[in-house]
Structure formats: C-alpha cells, structure tokens
Image (cartoon, rainbow, N blue to C red; front, side, top):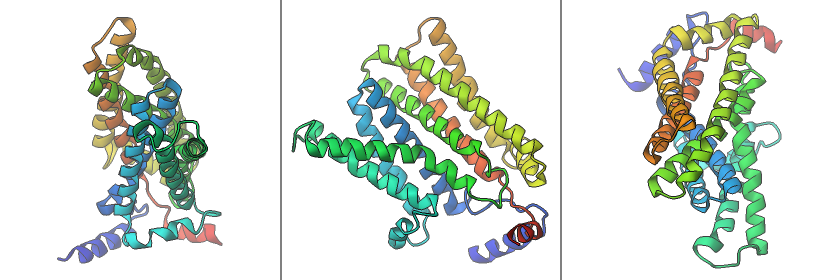
Length: 307
C-alpha cells in the first residue's frame, strides 16, 4: 500500500469516528511544525533573559535557535518555494504575523550582534539601535503568535482557549531560562548566574502549571465533548505516555528536584545544565502532547457552526 493510499484509508477511518483526531500537525511532516514552534519559543525566551542579564553569548544562541526554528517551519511546508505567501495575510493570519515577526527578529538580531562579533559598525550606532528594536519586536511576536495560531483553530475546541497564548508565552520564557542554564554549563562561565536563574525557573514553572490546570478545567467544564475527549487523549489515551514520561517525569519532577536541591543548598553547574535539558525536553513533549491530543468537532457540528 502506498503512503498516499495509507493516508487516505486512515482519513476514512477517522471520519467514521465521532471525534476525528488531529493528524495535520504532530504527525509525519507535521512534527516539524511542533519542533519549529518549540525552538522559536525558546529563542525568544533566550533573547529576553540574555538581554536582561547581559549574557552576550545567549543572544547569539537565540539567533541560531531562531534560524533553526525557521528551517523547521520550512521543512513543514509542502512547497518551501512558496514561503513568501506566508507574509500576504498578515491582517487575518497569525501564521503570517509569526512569519514576519521571525524575520524581523533574525534581521534585527544580526544587526545588533554584528558590532560585538564582527565590528563592522559601532555598538550604539543607528544600525545597531535599529537591530535592537527589530529584534525586540520580533521577540514579542515570537513569544505570543504560536498560542494564537492554535487558538484560532475553532474546529478543535481544546486549542480554542484564551489561556493558550499566555501558556505559550510562559513556555517560551521557561525555555529561555533552560537554554541559559545549558549555555552556562557548556561554557563554564558565571556559575553564580545559574544559581540566580533557579528562582526564575521555579516561578515561571509555577505559572505554567497554573495556566495548564486552568486550561484543563476550562476544557472539562466547557460543555464541549470534543474538548473533554482531548483531555482524555492526553491523560488516558494515545498521547498519555508522552505526557506522563516526557512532560511530567522529565519536564517537571526531575528539574523540580534539582531546583529544590539548589535552593536549599548548592548544586553543580552540570546539574544546572541537566535541569535545563530536562526542562526543555518537558516543554517539547507538553506542546507535542497538546497538539496530538486535539480532536476535531464532528462534521455535522462544524457545519452547523458555519451556518
């Protein structure tokens, strides 16, 4: 059976179900979209915290991550040569806004970092200031647009939540702290900064947990059977293993234990790096699980909403 035939058979089987699982994002080439959103969010958070704490190498890492996130988005597209069309619907599409924000960030970050690494013009010059502004604007868009992309999908009630954008902003900031911890471990520089980042990780993680629980509560009390089915898929269905092992065990329990040890005493820089890695892995699986758990409204319900 050819791949296209297999996809067709799977689509027919899904249509026979009351609640068709999402397979456009999170399966096959769609995994690259999740990866792209994950990396771009970390890039934005890394840039934000690197600016705040004055970590120049962190700014460079954020630029590289943003570029990798853009490449993942291109890999998701069926025809990358038509990527320019992503910028043509900025008034109505969060994908277009995200595309423009990412490109503003890439251009701005290059202009801002050139004085530090290449010295082609002075830091604080007009070009450098322009780069700072473009990168900062792009960073804000990158932090928020991903959540709005999912929220705008009305056919999947689990994603259609006002908390989703706020949750993705929190994920991006948590990912930024994780990336800096990994960078400090890799370079061996400023171990005291790693200790300073632990409370930041703790508070942002607490916000993530609260937002996530509120979103689950909203899904369970929304009156939408499709939203409740998505919650079931995450906790007891086809993505439960990803959620419990990737999100809870690796992404929450392991780094929380390291953080507790660090706040109550002292831990090595290597342990801080492991905290960052585990936290980042957990963030990826959280996003992956949320995408995979999404189920569509029944076809007849969607038709009635359209009319």
